[in-house]
Length: 146
Image 1 (cartoon, rainbow, N blue to C red):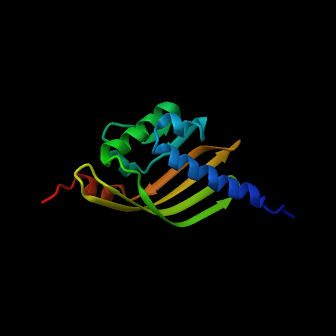
Image 2: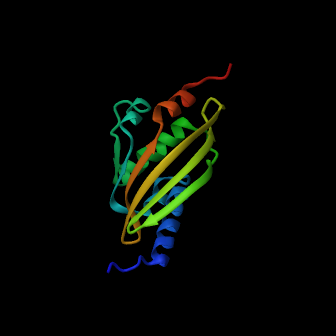
Image 3: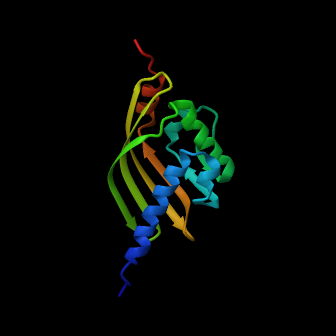
């Protein structure tokens, strides 16, 4: 018989993921406290449309710097408002489904849905898969006020 998952550990994994996402608004150094040294953040291939020439996978501190810079390039400096629809933890994974709302650099509202899967190791995030409609996001970020 397979042992039941440790509910305390699953809850702790969700907290770690939340702390990473909050720390990313503070900058790459704060975020690195919540990830492994060799962490990888995988983005959808269509993300390349938003940032031509940049790698799709962000790795380690250098990758975290790029992720934080990308957010600063697209949105104003207010922290995002997110509506969490689901947070599911199983084993070493946490999956989030949420809607993020921000303002673009042009001052227009931005809203998009995301599903992100996190893999944890040793109490830190080791790997992330971000699934979102990058083309829809790009259209919102490229829009200009009338």
